[in-house]
Length: 303
Image 1 (cartoon, rainbow, N blue to C red):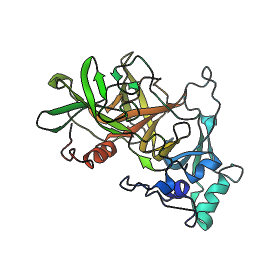
Image 2: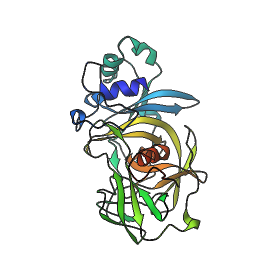
Image 3: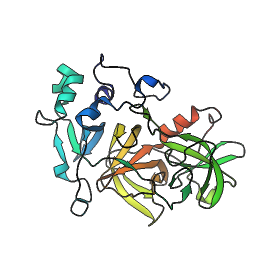
Image 4: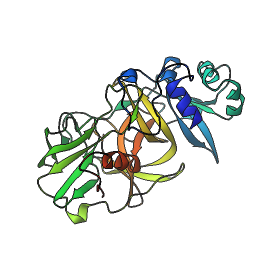
């Protein structure tokens, strides 16, 4: 957590703080500013499981991937943080004398993360994507979740699975710079989701857990949780997504943003993006629900 905060904001005297573990603060002083570590090629910070051990992890950008020969995260894409790494200098600047304590930190070389939205998908709003879990936020107030970058802006028309509706709430991190944020939208539908199709419970996942991604085409895809990132930087949309799982294989493609991900029959989160050919990114549902509930009118939001 210390490493994640430090590489997000930089040294204490570098500039304004982002308050990494809450999105309650929004200040223009760091809007549109990338994370400090981005200048050194850092794309995200968290923890991953390699073998039987957990390691602090730093994602390094960019990585040119051969999609034919490297369909998943391979061993040669992971290496210890050493002085040979170009991001070692960034870590040394922000941690200073404590850099030796990070001897077990692993660097994961990835391709640039990207949103997984594309035309012709299940959910249609400002962009298009995939319907996630249902949500209720009061009597007669029912809807469906999707990614915030799919369901922007609030108040606009939308549809899910052919059922018309409108965007009741959109939390879209695009162009918000280094502030870690939720990427989730609530689409209010003209008809409630049938009880038989509802996801009843939510849970969390640990590194090594098997999960199912409910893709819009091709049925569920099974993959494994590799680790969890405190934040994930996406350069092209200029945004930072908070609290994100990464998987051992990339099982999604454009159009899968918003897809629900289950451990057993319980929801763990929704797809927000991928590093093509390497890993899929899933934002934790508990974090998304917390951020939804903090908005006016949604304090009673639940599955």
